[in-house]
Structures are given as structure tokens and as C-alpha cells.
Length: 295
Image 1 (cartoon, rainbow, N blue to C red):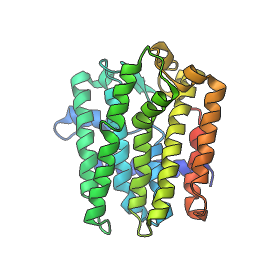
Image 2: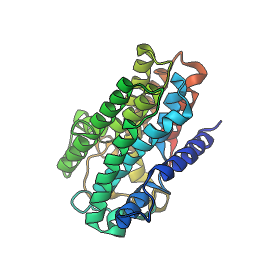
Image 3: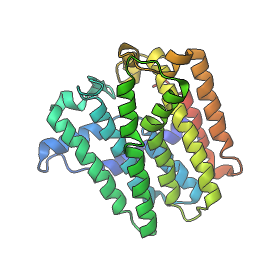
Image 4: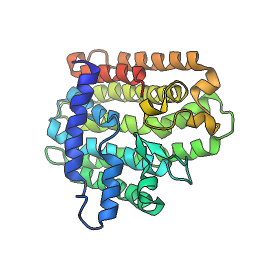
């Protein structure tokens, strides 16, 4: 199966699951619930849920058990986009090809929608069904919480805001990217792995190395697309990082070297899966897609 076909399959599955677990649009408070659904549904590549499902394949997880963590990581991702787009943060007007949540519903409702998505994400993990054990349920909650907090996405966004107009070292730029984007991608892989009955520490270490490398490659490719893509294809404003004078890999190293680093990270991620045979084929396909994508 091609990467595109695989991703389409995962997208369809998680879209159904998200639609089922989000509050109905007409239930009170209706405006808040409409904003939550607007922020999550009908848009996005669903890379993070796809990584949950693909990692679950490695450890033999039942697909039905993976729906909750797949939805949880996508809700955390969606909340982060809603909040990042706010005027106090990146002040963006376009996301996933449509007006940002605060443009469609107002700033107050957008903030509340993000808050509610965080809560719902952790509620889904807390209710993860057997055979997920209590100890593994707690481990999943801890993993997603760490990826979302001050040593993960929130911390990465703080570094990003503080770095505007500054020249960062390569190490500083990598730390910002690892936290802002890489942490949730790493969590996606780990959550999928935790749901399987065939998990051992050696395999988990392999998957963790894969996740760290492909997470950084993902953000470097985002940096590249901000320079080379177009607004219609990206679904967000092209050139926004440059316009805000944000540090990026192309700005620091040039496009050619940034592409080389992304390719090297992809190759290192693939090397991390050595010995996992066909169980890891979906992860391999996604690694190639992440670096080759145009949006």
C-alpha cells in the first residue's frame, strides 16, 4: 500500500472516531461545541493519529484500542493550533484552508474550545478500554501530558515566541522544534505502541528513536514548505515565519542544507526500525511521506 493510500485509510478511521467522541454541535453550550468540532473535523493530514495506528501495528494492538489515543493526540494538536493562531500568539487568519477558529467564533470561544479539547483528550485516555491495563492507561496519560506541557508543546511555543527577531544557534533551534512539534509526534508513536500486547523494552526503544528523528524531520519540512509552498496548497499563510522574522532551518542553514538534514533524519528514523520486518512497514511509509509532502 502506498503512503497516500495508507494515510487515507487512517484519516477515514480517525475522522469517524473523532466525529463520534466530540460533543454534538447542537448540545449545550452549542457555540462552544460547534467551535470544538470546527477546530478538529474536516481538515488536516492526521499524521499524528496515523503514527498511533502505525506504531500499534508493530506491537500487535487491536485497531479499536487505538482510536482513543489517536483521537486524543489529534485533539491536543488541534487545541495547540487554535491557541497558536490567536492574536496574542501568531495572529493567523487561515488554518487548514479556512478561517482560524478565533476568526470564525471570536477569541473567547476559541480559547475555551482549546481548553475543552485538552480536557476531552485526557478523558478519552482515562477511559481507554481493556485489555489496556490501569498502569498502561496512567503511562499514556503521563506521556501525553509531558508532550503537551512546558517541556513539550507549550514550552516549544514559548521558545518560539521569545525567538522572534533573534538568531538562534543550531542547538537552540533544534530544541525549540523538538519541543514544539517533535514532542507530540513522539507521544503519538509511544501511545500506539503502549496499546499492544507484544511490547518489550527493546522494541519500545527502537520506536522511540524513530519517533524522535521523524518528529524533528517533520518540523524541518514545515520550515521548508513555509519558504517553498503556496498558501492554497498549505492551507495556511505561506511565508508567515519569514514575515515574523522567526528562526527556521532554511533561514539559518539555507534550503539545500535544511533538505539534507530532513533527509538524513528520515534515513536515521528508518534505520531505527531495523529488524521489525513487515510490522513496521506503515511507519516506514509515513517517514517517507513526512519528508516528501508538499503541504
